[in-house]
Length: 546
Ligand code: F6P
Image 1: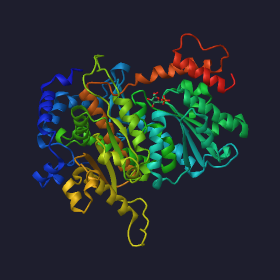
Image 2: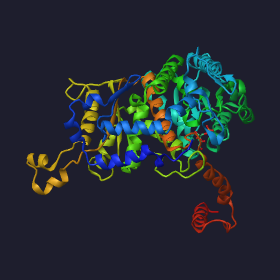
Image 3: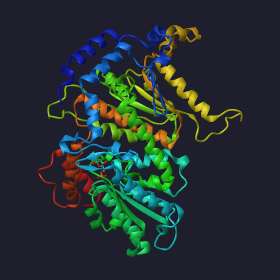
Image 4: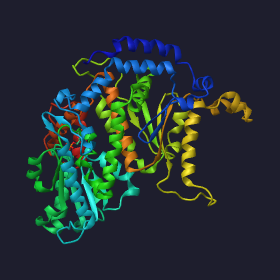
């Protein structure tokens, strides 16, 4: 099951092939095949995906697909969709895909059809958010809700925050704000200007044991109670969790709790009740379209042959750079301001999933895992870090994401054009310049002084994927998320790791709990501490007058 993929013939074939083709340039590849720009493309849902500007030949792609076959990606995918316990270290099924199954589907997991459960929660979320949106749900003073504050962290924050922003154009319900950090500045800034009488808190935590979330939720409840009294809490606090007992202990009526299941990983949970704030903002119909978009991509991933399967191809190409070219990171560059939080969302999705050093059986991996994802929306990044992308000496493959139809448009300076056209012409220009650059001869031909020529040479040969969708809609946002979810799965399956646990975050949490009392102590820090941490705490205490 977790055989070392780097010991297989498929891997060795790729190593040999890399030696043969790594010097080929995108200029060479495009010159050799005039149809390359249409041939190396695929569609998934409404997403048109151009992977022609990658340093791959048709042979590279078929060797990569063979690697996926060798790693039994199809079998592992089918096991995941069927509800097998593919999260072995926690002995759990991994079934975010069940959250977007249509109501007439069936999926039996551990002896129970989960589809009716999923749709029961969706119906409860729908009834509740309808009431909030229509004003039928009133706060303790009889006023309707104007603002929903989601308190959560990690997957209980990044997903809904990202999707809420992405669907700004479609949101016609209460405004949403998101609090995650245990830094008191976050809650303080979020509550500034809010009226407790018209504010609804959604405490979102899968486990309902996360320190940051419970601390912020307690402080938020204090803020509310100070203004409206303890009796106001049931009208202003609801919970999203898998843990009804802890929700009740916290003092939230479990009638106002929206549940989900242990087979939904935190970073895969925006399509569960964790999306409650999004549904409140944009309504149940648009939330249903968002889920339908995800389901379309699930079906694409589940049924499309590997060689045309978009998430599989993108995973294989990512792995090609990471493991064969030694690339350190992948930039995700949405040419949509509304997708500004998409790179941050992907950081949790990809890095918490695949940042692993041991395979499923506990043996050490022998190749790089876990691509580092980062990015900012275009065109802002162009005026910040694209210099390194264009002329730096690191290889940074990039995913460009753009939309043909704007959700909003404004005229250009002379009043005749479209600002959206300016935005998109930048996307197309960047991917072309990254791929084809400008060599010394071409730079000199512009009349550039000789001494400046080396500074102006654009090396090119920098690989990009372009994902072009008709429009940013609930459906296409769902498709984008599922596209990356399945890339993460495919890479994890090839590396032989468990993409669905996150043991690496636990020790830091535990040590923070142990250290916290030392920050307020007046005794010298104990000898158990290393000298660096002891001195930092001593200085911290001195600054705080302790
Ligand atoms: O600490 C990591 C993590 O467990 C994430 O995986 C998760 O999304 C986040 O914390 C929040 O967890 P919860 O929803 O249980 O509060």
